[in-house]
Structures are given as C-alpha cells and as structure tokens.
Length: 215
Ligand code: C5P
Image (cartoon, rainbow, N blue to C red; front, side):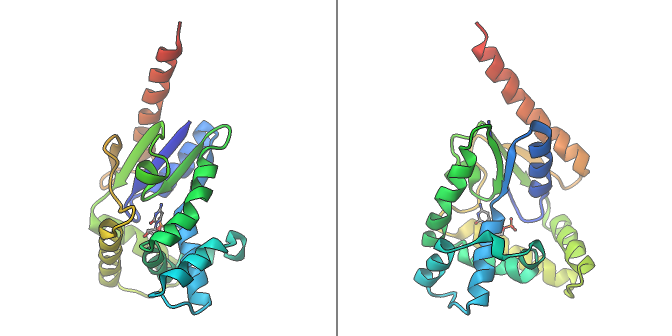
C-alpha cells in the first residue's frame, strides 16, 4: 500500500505521516528533506540560486547523510528548499529516488507537496492536509523560537506566505490537492484527532480493497 500525504507548510502532514507509518508498519519518507538538503548543500557550496544547471548538479550528487536534522529544520533551509524546488531539473533529479522508495515491497508513506499528483499518482490513499495561515505560522514559529531562532511571528507569517506562493505557482509540479485526495483541515484539530481522520481514510480503502478481493 502507498499512502501519499501532501499539504501546506506546518499543516501537520509530517506528524500524520509518521504516525500512519508506525500504525500500519510502512516505511516513511519525508520528501521535504530532499529539497531541504539540496537547498542547504547549495548554500554551503555558494551555488548561485539563479543557476538551474548548478542546482540540478547539487541535487544529483546529494548525500542525505551529510546533513543533520537540526541543520535541515531551520527557516533558512526551508526558504532555500522552496527555491531549489522550483527548478524542474532539481525535481527530476529527485524523482526516481522517491518513486523507488514508494514502490518498495511492503509499501510506504510519503509526505510532501506533489506525491499524490506527480510522484505517486497511483497511490492507494491520498491525503491533503491544510490549516489556516495564522495557525500554521504560529505552530512553526513556536517550533523555531524554541530552538533559539529569533524571528517575529509577523516575519514567520510573511515567510510562510512567500513559500506557499512559490510552491503553488511554480510551473513544474505545483503544490495542489490531487482531485482524488481526502482533505484533512487541522486548524481546529488536535494531533490525535487529525491522525484519527487520516486512519479512517486509510481504513476505508483497506476495507474496499478486501471487499473487492473476496470471492
Ligand atoms: O515540507 P518541507 O517544509 O520540509 O518542504 C520544504 C520545501 O520543499 C517546500 O516548501 C517545497 O518547496 C519543497 N518540496 C516540494 N515537493 C515535495 C516536498 C517538498 O517541492 N514533495
């Protein structure tokens, strides 16, 4: 079984993905890490962000082991990620890796922006996770300030809107809900309630599949 989870920044999609992966015993890939690592690598190598060929080279030679979780979770890494993610050759370089992961024996959960639309359009379950801008910005701001980053909530809201706009409006694999996805709006939901909704969506598909395969 392949579960594709897409959605906006700080919507809760990562938490839902990790919890579904543990519950159903499926491998999990946070595909944002690939773009974050490409962005951080490009920053570290002083690559020109206006040079698509150089950015694609960085993606092709990426070694995820070179980056700590801490390094990848900064606001700067997130901004860099959304810039490199707009480059078609960067996306192409990271696509096969994601597809191979998705198609492993036993199935997988992948979360990102284009899993249900581009990476795994044939996924068994597609979820689209979203929440209001204010709620998402507050969540991410708390997370970053607890780690010692100094930015105001207003700056966080501005950064989040900028990233949403870039992700939604890029020509290649824009962030958009797949037509056959189930919406989970986490604005007023606890994590447990959001995970319950996600599990209900997966269980519905599992029940339909077993009905179809009964003699
Ligand atoms: O989810 P996360 O905040 O880690 O993603 C960082 C950035 O990577 C996103 O803003 C988006 O530009 C890009 N991304 C993408 N496609 C994915 C996952 C992430 O374009 N499947």
